[in-house]
Structure formats: C-alpha cells, structure tokens
Length: 239
Image: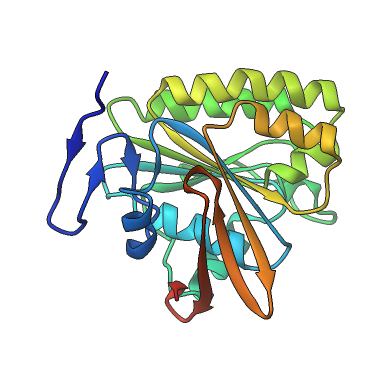
C-alpha cells in the first residue's frame, strides 16, 4: 500500500502520519515531524537539551489540541519555568499536567488537583497514573492529544522491572489507540541494557542526543542521519 503524501505551504513535504516537532528545520528533515499516532523515545544526557525538545513539541500543538506532561522529576511549576528559559510559554489552557512529583516533596501542605494539574501520589503509583491517563483521554474526546513523559526514567527507577514492563505494554497501546503521539524522555546511561530493551520494545521511533567536540547532535536512526544543534534564547537551533 502506498503511503499518502500531503503538502502544506510551510514544508516542502509533509507526510500525513506526522506531527510537528515544533522545530521547523527538524520537521523538514523528518518530512513532517514525529510519527502519529506513535510512541517516540528521546534519550539524552541530564542537561536541558532533551527537555527543550519536549517543550517545542508541546508548543507546536494548536489551541484546540490537548497536551499532557506526565511529571516524574519536576513539578509543573518547574517545567513551566524551564521552558521560559528557552523562550517557550507553556502556561496555556490546553497544556495540562499529571503531577507524580510534588507529593514526594517533604514539609508541604496537602496538594489538591485542579483543572490544569492532576495529582498522582508519587512515581510508584502506576495504577493511579494509569487512571489519570484514562481521565485525560476521556476529557480530550474529539481532540488531538500529545503526551510527554518528563521523564520516564523516574518511573523506571522507582518501580520493579516487571511492573514497568507491564505498565509500558498497557499504556503504549492505549495511548497510540487514541491517535496520540507520546514523547518519552529517558536519561542517558541510567538504565542497564535489559531495562533499555524493555523501554525501546514498543517504540515507533527512537532518537538520541549526543555531544562531540562541544557540538550537540540529534541522532536520527530511521534515516541514518545526525542533526547538529544548539540551545539559544528561542530554544533548539538547528545548525
């Protein structure tokens, strides 16, 4: 079966099964962006770079689409502040947070869910997280959805390997079935080969950030290509 090709005014080629990364030059290279629907793995060092890619992806959503950050290692407030450092405003009605982080902090008053932030009692609460994802799907009926795990590594570190395997088996298919594209951020060098194999198993695409001679590169295995980039005041700049 021949895949349908579409064209828009901004990109030379835009495949219909792609959603914008939020970075125009990268969209051109990927013929439209990340796979949709799909599960996309982005592996990178502990710095700001991989987070910046996720902020661009969220920012690329239209105001009629919903975006959900699943917060593992940062609070919603911290994510919004980090995004502002690269010129991206995530304080928008359609960008919401499933907060699995804030309840892990000590000496805080009881945290309650709001319309924008759904509280989950920590990264170990995979069943609660699964229910929160179901709620996100229900409240987004009729809309396009983008999910971002910020970061998946936190959940992997807090849970037994078998629990993570079962969780990933369920949510990868469930989120993809809704027509969503999910971006999973993973910390480089934190997990052993067996765990990485589990995380990569259900992914439609995998990207890696590497640094060589003081230049950052985004590796694109699907086309055997590397994209040099840097971070600037407006986010990721393709060189």
